[in-house]
Image (cartoon, rainbow, N blue to C red; front, side, top):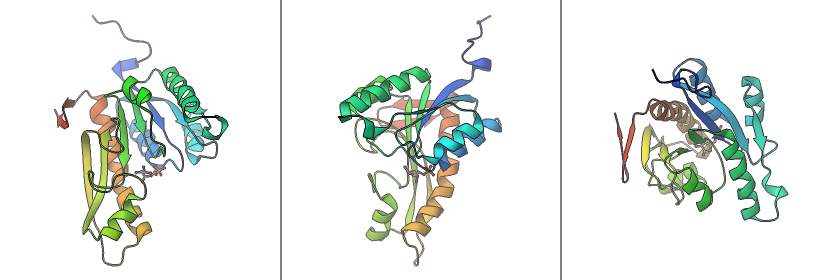
Length: 211
Ligand code: GRF
């Protein structure tokens, strides 16, 4: 018999979330864990923003929150060192970037390679970076959506795990489109986390096969 890992009761994965703001995607993950949809335990929230509403969500769910406030560090390197320490402290199998609004440095990306996921509000590889919904409106696309991808060194360039689409309607502006996409994000992110936690993702180069 394989002995039970006390940090992973019932073999559940340990996940930690990085978020900078509102945290509605974080909440979707919390809810999917609570309902038994995702076989994981959420062991921590790490945020760069002491005013993030995500902290309230963590408190309500009994999840420890660690603030590594960007503004308190003299350089990006010093900030990232503290962030890396906070992440290591989580001893997580998976880190979920749910509205974490900074680009991670190469050191962190390498250390957690293959075990970090990000949600982006566009159908990548279109409209990477900031203001993806605005970019979609301005470009005039008829279909938009969201992407959950593994994190590599680029900005929103890692292997794609899940995508979901929405129509762009003639009267849409950035905020109406963002709202429609967000509803899909709340489905896509828990699904991708679930697949990871069930060991169902097989990554071969850029391609992610779902077992
Ligand atoms: C989402 O649109 C996410 O795709 C993007 O930032 C937004 C975060 O929203 N990266 P929330 O904090 O999860 O509510």
